[in-house]
Image (cartoon, helix red, strand yellow):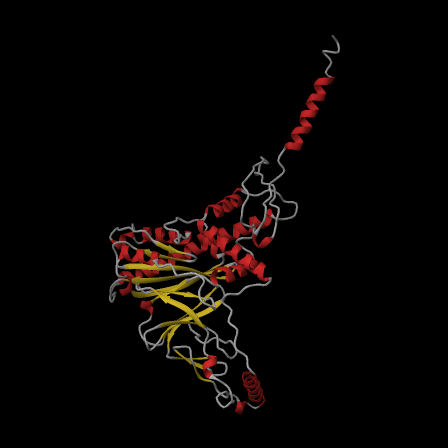
Length: 441
């Protein structure tokens, strides 16, 4: 009877159960693989009050929004070979009108030729790669590099090369500007593709067409004004949250916030009317917006300058002549005010996210805040982020197969013995100019 009532078997059973539970208790989750074949262990996720939480594995690396390597891959995989919207035909009214841009580190300019065609070129001189179009916008049928005076016409042809014309074998036709693929829709939307060879993908024009069908004769629009505002955040931060309208259209969070804020602030100036027509948003970085029952529409583009800097550009247009229309200036001012406000909010949100991500990745730190998990969850729910990730993975696979980085936009200048001889002469003349100022170019 005493053996049956002894506490020893009960204690042994309890200790065995405790050991089993300790071994079975979850100790964190780990992703299978990360981008570009890298692997990384995600830390154990816990709440601030130490409650254990199990979250789903993320396909996105923790440095998705602040990695220099990922940004460089985006340059090659996304901006180096996708169709990118730059401008509208209404901004070019006479031959020689040009606009210059820098998209993900690629200097580009558009120019209207004497034949009425819009052309796009890399904004670098063929001699020493100096800038050709020096202003954001201007008008000139001849664009000249200020370094050594090489000049080009609206077709990108070299028309003047001081001290090179008399070099035997130097061919001007072989030293024109590097052209960029450009396509203009019937409604005036201008897209470019930086691939050196023929573009690997077709330009999807359904979205701009739908925008025109909903809102009127976009081709007859008049450009009112525009401005680029620099923001200290990753360009993808503006498009983490989106509403999908079609398979190729996405709604940047910044565009949505700007649109709603502007309409709220200028409602009394627009007879209390609000925007109801669907906006059009196109991969990877542009959206078009209409202010319903008014004569105005605008575009928003997000041009990344680095992994931590983005240029947000707006351009305001009108369907009709706006001479003497006070509301156009008012709307333009409000656009600048609201976009600036939203950029500031995104900067604060981005910096907070970067700091928290850095804290969570410190050695020995395993706790991840609710905000960080929410952000990573938003990435997984974003169709745009998935599209970007897929493009990066495909390009990474291509580079792995070739065993080297693949730069679709890279153009190699043609180097010949004669061109090398001319370049040596150029350097000699330059040195003489430094020693004897009277001989300077």
